Length: 253
Image (cartoon, rainbow, N blue to C red):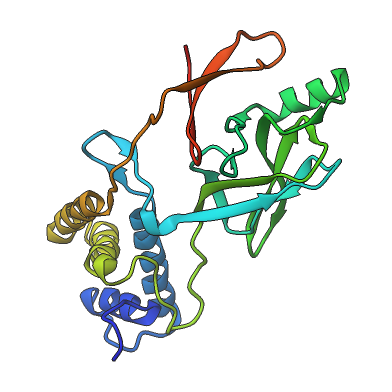
């Protein structure tokens, strides 16, 4: 039995019917309803959490990634759907190493000019390297010092959902997100075509915020009481980190 999930054609047909363009739009009408639906999807994918006025990242747009370093290699290609880093890259359980700390790419280059250091990675940078008209921007993951052996790094990143191309393509988020997605698409149609902030705009806001509440997961920012000194970035003071067997959390002192 199929789930009550939403696909591409079901979404843009709802927009078409709302605009009075029927259930089989074509030509310029089809182009219009598809454009409105894409705009509604983008609003849904990148919402604002009204409780703290910050951008919210849906749990279904978070992806776990494991990266194996290569000896004497400091540049690594990131997946094509990479959008931004969510958690700091950390080593596997039992290594005792602190999570890598982010630095500006130019800092990384300047430090490599000053000292071609090798060892275990302590710093990282996310660097846009190429742009593809069909896929978008590709990113690399840079580390310093250059790894002198193989290390396993792991982190979560935010994905950029692929654009729907087939009428049967489903949206991320599953059953729970169906109504919020539809209302966001209808809200765009309402505002663009009728130039009003009406019922669908209000429903889109309400359903999105309700979904954010249910999507949030309990988090902990510090665990354990084992402290160790971390070697500072050249020219900076020392920091401390709090470590456990499987998770390491950094705090500024």
